[in-house]
Image 1 (tube, rainbow, N blue to C red):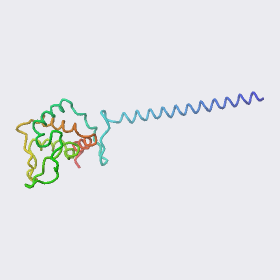
Image 2: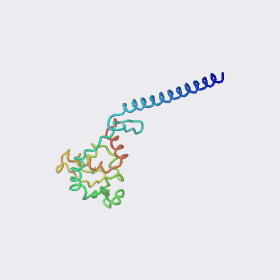
Image 3: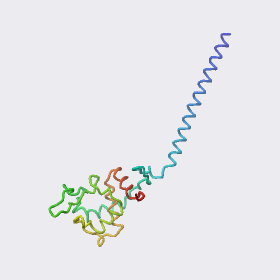
Image 4: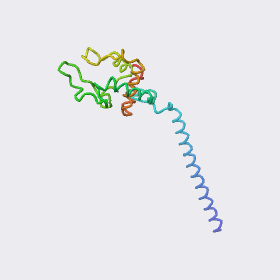
Length: 176
């Protein structure tokens, strides 16, 4: 009788362990499936950029050839005013005696990344807004659109991830 009872207990333990292992494996399988399904919903290349509950596709990777070309063009056309390291003028937020603003930085410390691509391309091509007494010259006679885009690609390469994603969001978001 004791032997039968011991056998019954061992059998019960065996079945409970097998059931627990099955539940653990089933839970793990569900987790893997959930991760796969979630990951398959993400647009290839990264996570969508979501700001103010408005999602846009992930920011595209920078083109290394354009960045290299843009670095050369930036040094030639932009560094004189905006600095070799995109640092801009020291007190770029303070108006000069003539009412114009000094050249702003184009790195993450500035505000260039607050503006969409088309506006930035327009400013480089056509110069700064004269209504704000801007001294930024137009470069449309020296640079074509692809060269301007390369300069912008170089500038973007110097921003942090958050600035890049915000600027991308501003560029491609649906009009409010």
